[in-house]
Length: 121
Image (cartoon, rainbow, N blue to C red; front, side, top):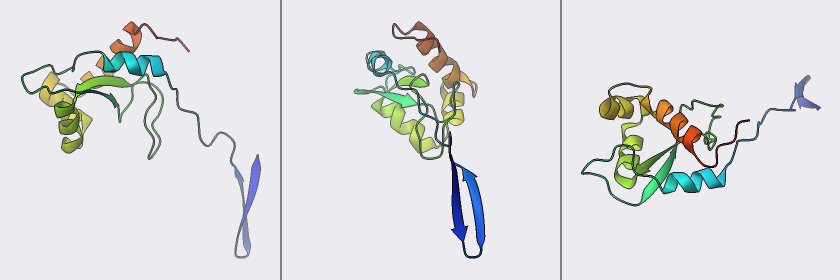
């Protein structure tokens, strides 16, 4: 669908179709993630367990101000989820606990593939 926007004496025609792709949601997988153990699993772990949507997803895209889709989840306890956000970087968090920057993507993909609610689409 084309939309005309007038700005003073100028007119712009924008194609606004498909500007917002729908995010993949799988509530059963999200619930399953909540029943897993924290991926760090050390002495600092504190409940409750939370599902972290990757900021840099392995699958799909993440728009500005939007969560990544539900395939891109890792289970983190409250302590480690808070720490990840305080660090401000999934790469730094992954490097600290797993020795490389891509581990969270790999773990999210592994959780997705072994989920009883996995859907290939």
